[in-house]
Amino acid sequence: MPAESKVEASSVRPSPSPSSPLTERQEARRRRILHASAQLASRGGFDAVQMREVAESSQVALGTLYRYFPSKVHLLVATMQDQLEHMHGTLRKKPPAGHTAAERVAETLMRAFRALQREPHLADAMVRALTFADRSVSPEVDQVSRQTTLIILDAMGLEDPTPEQLSAVRVIEHTWHSALITWLSGRASIAQVKIDIETVCRLIDLTEPDRS
Image (cartoon, rainbow, N blue to C red):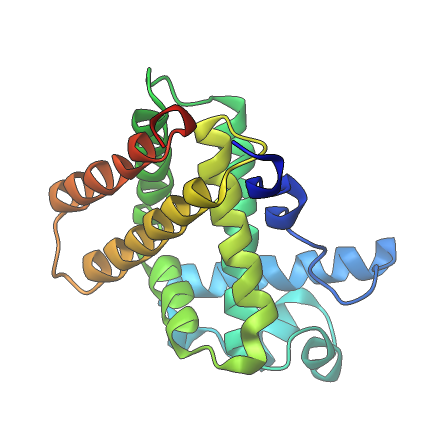
């Protein structure tokens, strides 16, 4: 494969969430906010996450909370990125055992799906926020996409994916998010989600460089 068709791994690495580096104190405050958001969402879903309650639970002023996250949608999308980052760390400690890249990605995404399944209210709140997100939330949505891409690439064992492989990853990512939505709405069973994920992951085999 010619060098120019390669995509630098850094292009899919998550950039820091804030627009400028946070001090240690600011980062600790941001982590408290995200933790409070996840806790409230876990108890009652999207509607349970009220900015005033998040501020009280995280022990920050309401105005400070809005400086970090301009709206509940911004906050919940950032919460999803944070949850995915934690999942990624857990997955790295126990990598998937599949023999092929497609098997490893399918296993990884189903493990991530089951983690969300254990917190259905939280999962619903985060997915609803993604659905409601407009252009003002693009940086946070991009972080979620980058984190999902990283999880898939790690399962594939790739550091320098080709454009074709990145295209396959995007389709897999879209399918995974769609499967999550259909499951949360009661329109798909876990068994159907597993079939859909395993089916779309076969795209990986079609994008191997030696087959192109």
